Image 1 (cartoon, helix red, strand yellow):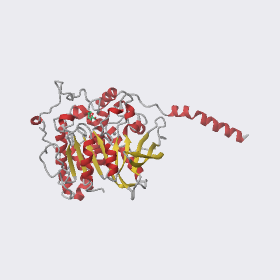
Image 2 (cartoon, protein in one colour; image 1 turned 90 degrees about the vertical axis):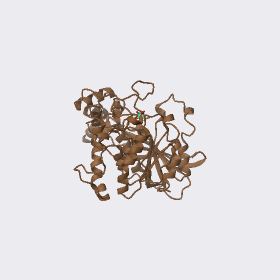
Image 3 (cartoon, protein in one colour; image 1 turned 180 degrees about the vertical axis):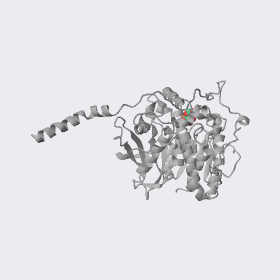
Image 4 (cartoon, protein in one colour; image 1 turned 180 degrees about the horizontal axis):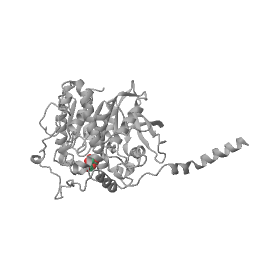
Length: 447
Ligand code: GCU
């Protein structure tokens, strides 16, 4: 009899588990980007926000592209001065104390903090195939990082990535993690319209003895302010909207790249001390955030990252802080960032992007961009170059070499003799033409 009752209770628990989950956990809050943006402005006590310039050269409010009006900033923070005014005079002072002051400010005011309750990711290799990339025999491992969602079972979060290595290897290979746009999100896009060199980087890496990972950032955090109560950010907040210093999408994407590196550290095919990160545009921003904060990354290729990436926030040229803080892009950042397009300005930021580059020191970092004639001026190539110039004192303090010049070079000049690299290629909004130069730069460190 007792056994029967126990059996009935067990059946009851299992048959009700779905209903119980719904009872205990409130469903994720649904807010559009516009509503969430307004909610943050209210939390910041903001009644209005300055509108950013247009990115369309035809518009009357087109962004400034006149160099003589570009740099009235007077307040570029010095990475080698502590918040209390004292000077950083040794590499130890930088690594042990000053670096963390700068990290704190980037996290609090710009990119947001990672929550303390991020659940564990369990990696599965879902399929292994032998195939070819441009006649090179490769092994492809399809990876799935399942995030433990027991804190909030209403959201399932999975990281999708593919590891590709040459079949013929003598020793563990170095890897570039490529942050990849998910082309399946554009079902009407005609793949034959992709430029012919779109995937060439893959064979370029393989021919140079590297493997690579294609990571899909939007698999675990969508690229939309209306998605902030979903994905990994939503999971950690149990479906509630963000606090003002909670992480934005760029930090979440960077976290995913770090989780991929955790997996790579367990795979014997890979030399996990030689893992780099690369991305273009919004993924160039995410790549820079990744390598700046996770010191395990050995090298970075930061393509056309522009505003909220490598370009100085304080520079008035191309895309501005007001654009990034708008309801279309604010989700990349933490809530606090929005106040710099309201009661404050870019000049009030406690840190600027040269210090984000400095956080990568002493590791090699390569900054790429295209030609203004083809790519446009929105990205602001010179704003990124200047940030690289102003990051140099930290590299030098750590015994590393700067760009070698401080004057903006002619397009096509390869600045790759130091540990900060810069190259403006002649193409458009793409990293494709720059892989060759990146590999030349990387060769000094990774064979
Ligand atoms: C927009 C945005 C940029 C971003 C770019 C992209 O142009 O304003 O900041 O880099 O999209 O990611 O393609």
